[in-house]
Amino acid sequence: MQIGVAYSEPGQQIWLNIEVPDASTAQEAIERSGILQQFPHIDLAAQKIGVFGKLVKPDVVLKPGDRVEIYRGIICDPATVPRKDTEDDE
Image 1 (spheres, helix red, strand yellow):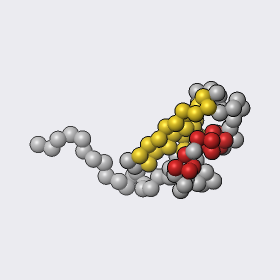
Image 2: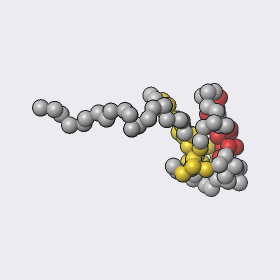
Image 3: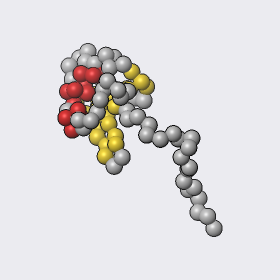
Image 4: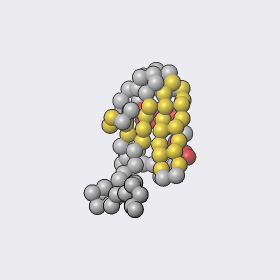
């Protein structure tokens, strides 16, 4: 079956469509995708993963067309970061 695996860092995103055996888990799909070799600092024991934006455990069984996402930790508190004003000040 075909699924997608996605990971993003500042300035670099990757989304791979790969074939995996039926009844593959999210963990197996990530390992099969090669993303862990491209980004060796990914730590699946510490980072969360999801399918279409919903958190899942690594052993969740995938369905055809699923998109597995590897999430990075938040590096700053959104409440303390000033927002950029998108309107022009005149």
